[in-house]
Amino acid sequence: MVINMNNYIKEYGDSTFIQLPFNDIDNLILSQLAYNDYEGIVRYNTSITLRDAAREFKLLHNQEQIEQLIGISKKAAQLLFDCAETKRFGSAVLCHYVNKIVGDIDKQFSAISFELDDGSFVTSFRGTDATVTGAKESAMLSYMFPVPAQIEALHYFQESGMRHRGDIRIVGHSKGGNLAVFAGVNCSNSLKKRIVGIYENDAPGFPKWFFDRYDYRQIKDKIHLFTPQGSIIGRMLYHDANPNIVVSTNSGLKQHQVSSWQIEGTELVKTDGYDVHSNFVSNYINELIDYVGDEDLELFFDTLDDVALGIGIEDFYDLKALDFRKAIDLIDTLSQLDDNQKSRFKRILKKAGTDFAKEFINDKKEYIIEKKNKTLDIAGVQKKEG
Image 1 (cartoon, rainbow, N blue to C red):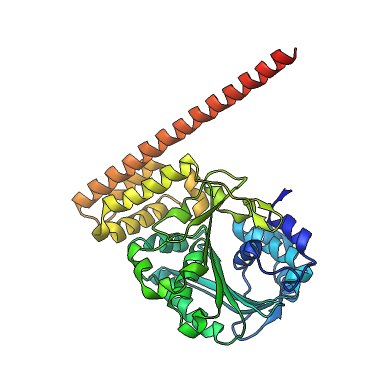
Image 2 (cartoon, rainbow, N blue to C red):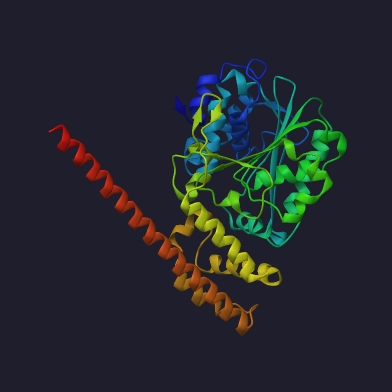
C-alpha cells in the first residue's frame, strides 16, 4: 500500500529503533523536524525528550500562531506533535539546538541533534527557509565556496558529534542536505569512522572539483541522495552520488516538499527518471550560470536580490506573482551596475521570461492533448462495450 510520511508514523510509531532499524523514511522525518523553532525549549548544552519538547512547543505557541506559520514550518510543527504520540520518536532526546541568521553576511544556519533509543546519534541541518537571506545563500553556492553556513555546519558537527558515542548519521533537506555532506566530508577522521549514513534530500550540490578530494572519496559510499521526479533544487550544481528519484503527488516546485513523497512500507516509491520540466529548468539554470560567468555571478545574484526586494518579493512563495516587466525596469535604478551590466542583465531577464512563458504554453498544450487522448480512449471503450 502506498502511503505518505504521516501514515508511516501511525503505522510504525510503536516500533522502537531497536525493533525496526533506522531507514530512509526516518531520515525524512528528522530532516523536517529541524524546521521547528525550538527557541526556549532546547538549548545547545541541554537536552529534552521529543515528547516533552512538543508539550513545551504548544505552551509557547498557541494554535492561532501555528496556523500563521509559513508552509514548511507549519507542517514541521504538526509533524512534531504526531511524532510525540509515538514510542519510536517520542522518547528521542533533542539536544544541541542552534539558530543563527546574520543578514550582513547572508548566513542562515540552524541545526538540532537527536539521540535515538538504539544508541545512535543523528544531526539534522535545517534547509533554506522562505526568507530572502536563505534564498540568497543557496544562490551563493554557485559562486562562493565555502559559504558561511557550511563552515558553521562543520564546526557544529565536529563539536557536537565528539560529545556522543555510537553510530552517527547526518541528515538534511534542501540546503540542509548540502550542509550534511559538507560536514561529513570535512570532519575529523575519528568522526568519519563513526558515520554510517549521510542523507541529502533534494539538496543543491557542489563544484565539480569537490568530488576529487581524498576526504570526499573516504565517505562517498555512505552518501544517500533523494530527489523527486520534478526536482529543481536538488539538481543545482553537481552531485557524485546516484540519485534515488522519488514519486511525488505534487507538481512543479511543490515537489520539494517531502510530505508529498510517496512511501510503500518502509521504503520510498522510486521511478526511473526525471520529468521533462525538471530537465528543462535544471538545464536552464546551469546554462544561465555558465552564461553569466564566474566573474559576474555574485553581482548578478546581488542584483536579483535587490530586484526581488524592490518589487515586494519577500519570500519564496511570492515568486508566483513575479512581474518580469517590473523586474526589468527596476534594474535601471540600481546604482551598483554600470550601463553595460544593466543592459546585459535586462537581456537575461527578458530571455528568461520568454523561455519560461514558452515552457508554460507547451505544458498547457501537452496537458490538453493528454486530456483529449484520455477522453477518446474512454469513448472508444464505451463504444466497444455498447
